[in-house]
Amino acid sequence: MQLAGARPATAAAPARTTLHLRCTGVAAARPASTRLLARARGGAAHGRQHAAAFGSSSSSSSSPLPLRRPIAAAATAGVAAAAASSSGGSDGTGGGLWASLSSLANVLTNFFPIFVLGAAALGLARPAAYNFFSPAAITPSLAVTMLGMGLTLTFEDFKRVLTTPGRIFAGFALQYTIMPLMALAVSRLAGLPLAFTIGLCIVGSCPGGTASNVVTYLARADVTLSVAMTTASTLGAVIFTPLLTQALLGTLVPVDAMALLVSTLQVVLLPVVLGAAINSAFPKQVAALAPLSALSAVVLIALICGRVMAENAAAVVQAGPQLLASVFTLHAGGFFFGYALSRALGIPERAARTNSIEVGMQNSALGAVLATAHFPAHPLAAVPCAISACMHSVMGSMLAAFWRGQPTGEEEGGSEA
Image (cartoon, rainbow, N blue to C red):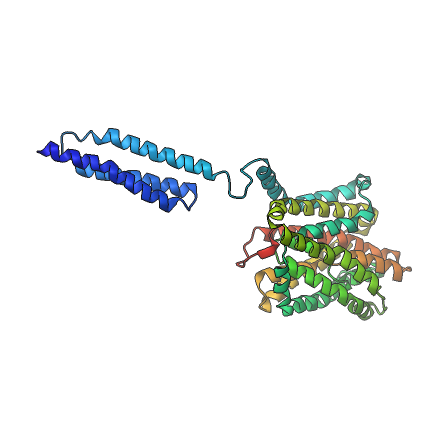
């Protein structure tokens, strides 16, 4: 009687285990394969407990062992098959060559400060190494980079930024207060010669540079806000740059408003809007190219930085540590106070990072043009502008590398790199 009663109980164990595994499989079809494997193993253990409970009291207690092994083996095989089928990826890459290239591009992008520093060092040590990259290619390269950033945005991002004009105004105000005051203070404290003081104050009075948009993109900050702020400060430069140079240097430096507007449209606004339009029309194709867009931005910025350094290598060497330290301090102050004051004003983290980058990075190329055109008696006035063009790119890249790995606590929308 005892053996007869034990056989139905032992036979029922596989049925219960199978039923449990099926239920577990339904529930685990949604999560990742690792979670499915854990639940399947739990189901097998649950079946073994049932088998032990019903069969341990008989002399045939060894009979569940041959049954438990097929159950566990079947569960493991099924889960392994499910894991293999899920590893192909839902993004359509199938885990193939393109996925490997995208992963490699993401890894290389995280090393962009090293690329920028290396490019600058090469330009300083061997200026002829950049003969292949013409200075005339700098502006088109920036435009291509801005197109790549536009591919990460949508028109909804522009609507979002325009609904918070206070952030644009805050960045604008910080741009035209922190940097001019920092330039004046640093030049006085460092006791710079007059020509270098002129150049440093002109840099501090210039609007935000287009490279700041690229650094914002790499830092995973708010690209749309950065573009809006660059545009606003560039348009404001028509009025504020002459007034600030007049206040700081006692000389009114006129700015070609139309040339500045056309340059901003060509390099910043039009490429970004075109990229957003392409992203809206072909979102899946653009998403697949996103890692390559970030890497191409790194390559182009490194080339531009190296070319600028190569053009001004002699001036940088002759400037000496005093001027280099002054330019570094100017931009470091812009980065620091742009962020600190933004947070003090209650501006969210991503927008504060964007303000920091916008304030710390100036349109140094414009400064060099203004210094050369309006201070011919001081030819060295353009040297701080040339150093600034490279210095803020290197510093901004290093800051972006730090922020790139730091969470913001906010949804990162269209600024993902």
